[in-house]
Image (cartoon, rainbow, N blue to C red; front, side, top):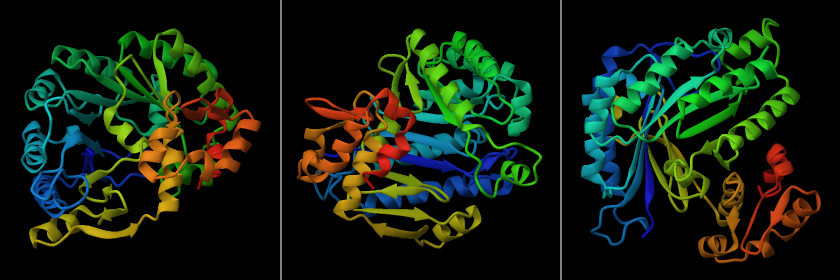
Length: 388
């Protein structure tokens, strides 16, 4: 049996962050309830239409899903009852084991203890907060509505509501950000004892307000050398605090790695539900229409919300297994797992790329697997391009 992850996209936000290029929309209050109804329809229909695929044990079996992830946008903008309705649709359509990881992304300042207790009572067992930075000027530049005091309150409310798996995101490499300000953010974040921390280098995406500010000369481009120094500092600070650097952008306490994201990094199948959501099976990936109104109307008419898709040939699949798997810093890509998935020895099909990476000190060839070296972490894009 091959299990899979379920991703549920909630595209609504209270405000638009300056750096965000995700499929998100401000307002649209009147579409939120119909959107959740459409989401439930898609979930039930997808499980039935995929009943004959290799994910299931037999033609009559429901596919087994081991993770559920509500992302966005801001899922916590919805009432608990609406999130619970979508979650129940997952349990009706898929075989969900009691040990399944169920995550909801939240923005600090949008939740309180009662809200989080309601989520906990419906089976949510993991929370992820977009903290981003502890510096008020950096938060303002990013267009965030919360202050770091809201992050503190959110973590305290999470613990009071019974959550023992809480994550938050931080962003580094911001315009005007210094190594000292980044150090201060880490120093005030760690006492909150998050179980998981994601650190992302800022990228300026075309079409975002931040991109326009840079284009007009109002904001400087991020300094890649400064960002590398911040990443290096984070490795040292988080390592000294006992966090495991298990993936290029992610650290966790022992046993608290994000199970849902591990599915992506191991190049395993997942279903994405909602406007603009992407899915991947063994040999194909597909994606939905982006606009919430069109998504809702299609499902209301009994039509598929899919916008397009593409087949994945074996060559591309092998490369994706390498590119995604090398993001896992300790686990890497095992020779046995690769051979089981693709029917060939990685050391034969990628002999030249592996040799070159090893000679440059970017890849570590162990007896059972290949992984990035510390130097390779800083040049990961260069390493991974050799496998595409």
